[in-house]
Length: 179
Ligand code: AR6
Image (cartoon, rainbow, N blue to C red; front, side):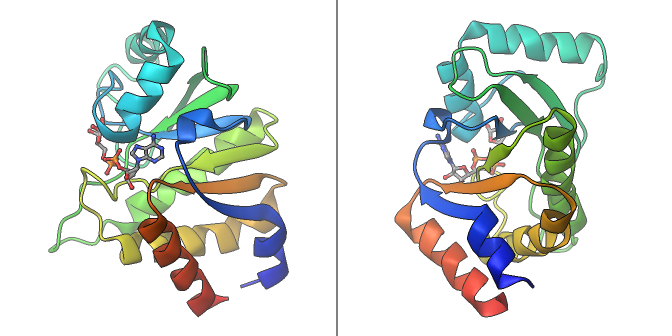
């Protein structure tokens, strides 16, 4: 893993993702795309009702059966400081089934979609680690692997936005282990 690449392109912060002035923020949504709790609820509240209308449009057009795990869909950010919201659906954690490829797809596909829309910066929440129950350390390893693979392929500045000091510290520790 390239330590300098991480140092230059990845920021780890603690805060509310809805406040970030980046080109795109990623939403840890659910299949319906119609909003929910956690970061999804916060993003919908901050973006205003136009976001739900845009999500309904996605359901009416590209995703009539809902957004599958690991897939991504883009809307405008409306009242958010971010230009775009990239909605993705992380896997619900299951002890008996390895779903790490689905979590990796969320990050990988979001980076690709952001680059396709000429974004220079993107911020992620810790997808699946809240209501969907993914153990934080396991999720951190997935994120680090995807970033190591994808950072050289695009020019995006990546912010990993955690909601607590504890999560940010755990991620930093996981990062130190592999760098
Ligand atoms: N900014 C940054 N991170 C946040 C914020 C925020 N404003 N709010 C929460 N987090 P979760 P999931 C963190 O549960 O596990 C929704 O109902 C939170 O502390 O939001 O992927 C959807 O509709 C945690 O670390 O997402 C789905 O049904 C992380 O964001 C379901 O939850 C993700 O927690 C998705 O569950």
